[in-house]
Each structure stands twice: as structure tokens, then as C-alpha cells.
Length: 323
Image 1: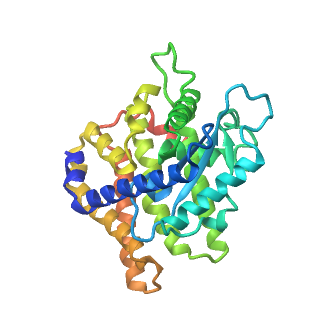
Image 2 (image 1 turned 90 degrees about the horizontal axis):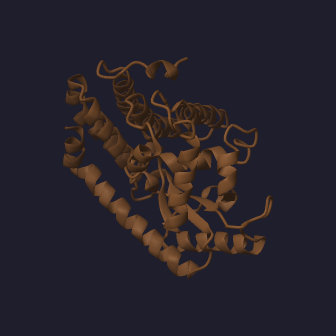
């Protein structure tokens, strides 16, 4: 039912189609620029392209993973010269496709070793080295731009680390993964408060938090508490969906009739938010527009809360959301 409603929303399906075409353009252009270079490096897109939510003015959020076989401990998989060439090619990519510049004009671009993404989990280095964000976005909202094989290996390796205690246990619950996803959500909330204190355009960021970020995080949280992600194989299949598809697929399995009548309106609210971003309507200071989108964000949040407290869910994992 819910997946059908998502399929029937023409505006969202058109956005999915546009995003897939944009991803194909990014992949083809980058492949031409690289011309076979960097077989040990994978670039993936997160953000709006990773969620298939691109619009007219969407930027490109990229993350880079490398993994060279036979690398010694502490040795870099790419030289500084190769890294500089990679960053240069990424700059050429956005210029050729006429995309907005990278945040900070590329100063946040960094190459991460796959081993570090895994070994730093729970380590003091996890946050300051940006391993945490890279790892979570890989799982929650990513699309490969280059080196599909390394992308799939990275996804598999990260998932196996989160599910390492699953083998041989019938009562396994993916609490390790659940806790890291919730930690990511709280980090996003703290980052919003930081940006608000710096007097950045906080209300637009607040809507991103209440729509896109909330969807990305809690569509997966909902799948965990609905016991749809109990092993690596299930997460592998789940990861092929973008967040809106994840939410619809989990709601299909929960099959709560109390939610069905609201889902169509929730999709319309979400698409109106995406459309407003596309046409820069969220840049406005008009109070009536702000109030309108705040109301839609509140409805979306209420829906996600009610889904997580559905009578159709087994309560055994719900308690871990608060305790």
C-alpha cells in the first residue's frame, strides 16, 4: 500500500528520475576526467543526490574512501600528489556540470582509509577525523560515483562490523548499529544548534533537519525496531533503496491502518519542501511561508513518531530509543 502510494506520487517519481539522470551525468563526467586513474579510490555522493532528491540548485556532497591491498600499517593508499589530482578532478567535475561549489570551496574534502572507517568505530578519533559521518552516510544515504566494486566492499565491510555479534545467535538485536544511528541524529541536532549560534540561515537548516535528516535517520531506525534488519543480507537489500523507499517498504510490512490515511499527505508535504528548496523559496524571511513549512515539518515529525509507536510493532526494541 505505502510503496504504491509512493509510486503514485508523480512529483516525487519525477524527482527520482531527474536524480538518477543527474547521477548518470556525474558518473560519466567523472569517469572521463579520471580516465582509469585511482583504482584504489571510491567516490560516493551523499546529500540530495544520495537520497534521489535533487532539484534545480542542488549541490554535490561527496565522500572519498580508499583501500589498497597490501598496504602497511600507517601507510597511505594514495600519495599527496594523487590526492591533489583527485581533488582537482572533483573541482573540474562541478565546473563542467555547472554545480554549486563544494562547501568551504573543497577544504572539507578528505580521503578516508576503509580500515579507519571500521577500526575508529567508537574510538576517540571517530568524530574529529570525520570517520563517523562518512561511515553513517555511506550506510544511510549514498550513491557510488566511481569504483562500484570498492563501494560495495566498503558497504559490506562496515555492515559486517555492525553485525559482528550476530553469527550463531538467534536472539541477536542490532543495538550496535541502532546506537550509532541515534548518535548520528543527536550529532546533527547539536550541529544545528551550533550553526544557529553562528547566525547562519538557521531556519532553512532547521527544515532540512526536520525533513531530510529526520527521514534519512528514522526510516532506518524504524526498519531496525520493526526487526527488518537482523543480518547483513537484509541490510544489503535495504541499502539499495533511498530513504523515501525505505520508509514506504517498512510501513508496508508494519501494515498499520492508522497510518495509511496520512501517508499520502505526508508525501505531499515532503515534496513541497523539496520543491521549495529547488526554487530557493526557503531563503525567504516571509513569516507566513516560514509558518507554513513549520506546520508541514511538525506533521512529518508527528507521523514518524506515530510510526515508531505503532501498535503493530514489537516493543522489544522500542525501549532502546529512550533508554
